Structure formats: structure tokens, C-alpha cells
Amino acid sequence: PPEGGVKKSKRTKIIVISSACFVVVAVVAAILIVNFLSAQKAKEIRETYIDNLNKAVSYMIDGGSDAESLCILTGKVWKNTIFETDNAETDKYTKTADGSFYSSFNDAVSYLYKDASTIVTIQSIKTNQILAEDIMDQLKDPTEEFEECYDAMKELYDAFEKLTGLAIEPKGTLQ
Image 1: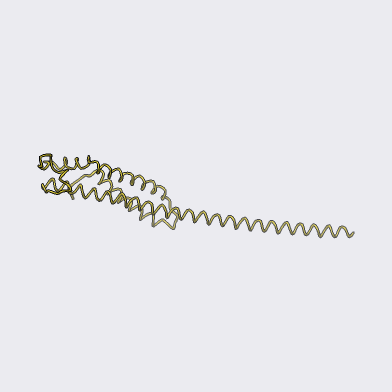
Image 2: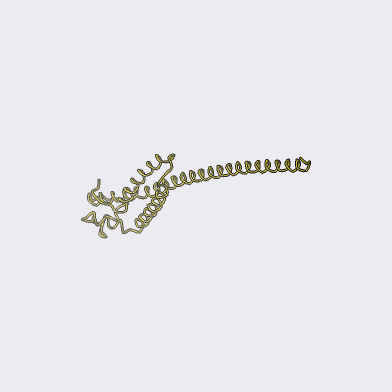
């Protein structure tokens, strides 16, 4: 073969080998980039889930604390009206203007729930209920890693809903 054909053949081989190497490097780089981005996305999803778990707990603790305080106060008003017990904290709800006790604890509890500070507390509880519910919706369908956490969080949320429901709308007996 003519000498120009050998040079052309070598040049073609070099171009083909260089192109193949470039394609292999590009494919490996693309795989590495995709894997890195996938790992970053998985890390972000995990961190967001953990952050949402913490937010849900915070909302439930805040709302639950307010609810517990209101339930305790409601119980005191109820009991102090029934047993006609003087108490600086509850007298404004349990006694009439002339200082006598209301004949019905329902009247006393009604005054408690019409009080401005009770209304503010109830609004705070309702706000925490809404925030906790929104976060619980975001926590649905957890990854396998967080299934047990979600189950525990769901139990906590159910208890939170019962407690806050009792605080907002007390029903039943004093017990």
C-alpha cells in the first residue's frame, strides 16, 4: 500500500480510539454525576423528613401543653363549682357577682370558655392542630427507614388530637 494510506489508516485508528475513550469517559462521568445527584437528593429527602418529624413533635408539644393547662383549669372550675370551693384562680368563673357559686358547673365552664385568655389559648391550640396536621400529611408514605418513626408519630398525633379535642370542647364527666 502506498505510504499515504498507512498514515491515513493510523490517523483513523487514533481518531476512533480517541473517540471511544472520550465516549467511555463521558459515560463514566455521566454515571458518576447521576449517582452523586441521586445521593444528594436522597440525603435532602432524608433531612427534610427528619426536620418534619421534629416540627410535628414541636407543634404537638406546644399545642398539647396549652391543651393540658386548659384541661386542668377546666377540671378545677368544674370541681370548685360543684363543691363550692374558693380558689383565686377559678373564682372569676365559679362565682356570681354577689360572691355565691353558680348552681350549674356548666355555667361556670361556659364563663371560662368565654374568657379572653381562654379564647387566645384555644386559638393557639387550633393553630398547632393545623400545623401538626399539615406536617403529618407530609410525613405519609415514609421510606422503609422511617416506617417505625411514622407509626410512633401517628400514635402521638392521635393522642394529641384527643387531648386538644378535650381542651377545645370538654365533654363527659369530671374524670
